[in-house]
Image 1 (cartoon, rainbow, N blue to C red):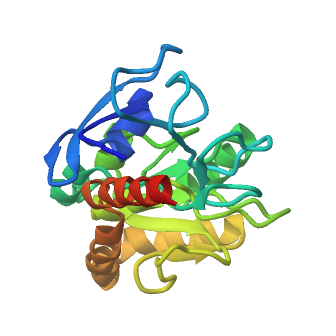
Image 2: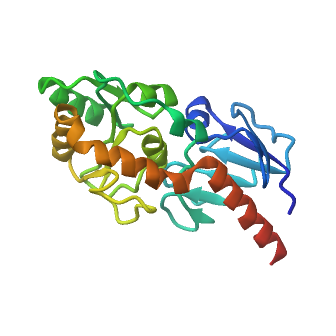
Length: 245
């Protein structure tokens, strides 16, 4: 399978975290807006997220699919997937400067009530906080720490956008999970089982940032294997191999 032209179809948030543009040894790639339902004119189409891209060759989700997957679907967890993986981390994120000294914690949770509860508890401790239903590149750049709130009723998989946080040199608080895709809790990120864990970790990271500096270093190193220009190249190789079977 030739893959000289690749289109990554994505909404603004996904494009800023996991997209890619440029020419590489394995092909040329462009990230295009994912609002339409038509398929871009490219040999390989990868859709980030659950909508857009027409009939993409690969659909790459940041969370487990809510229904049985159709076609080649990649996600961090779920049944009948073509592959399990986190989102790639956009190359430009590795070049972001350190967070501002006054930057605080961004709490990411789709559940508004859960998000608000964590934000309130951190604000009571004097920690600068912001909340979002999904991570964006702009919010990531403005934060020192990104915390994905766990679900205390069930195990959540590693968030698909976790490599983007580490690539940006930000601290990551992620749900404790069995499959971490090469990320190592206690070395490159902190794993939280409860909201109490999130609050305690985020408070400590804000109060004693120098003590946790190694996490930023090891986090960026761990994110290298998730670098977009490397991961999409591997995807091209996988599809070429599949075509020869």
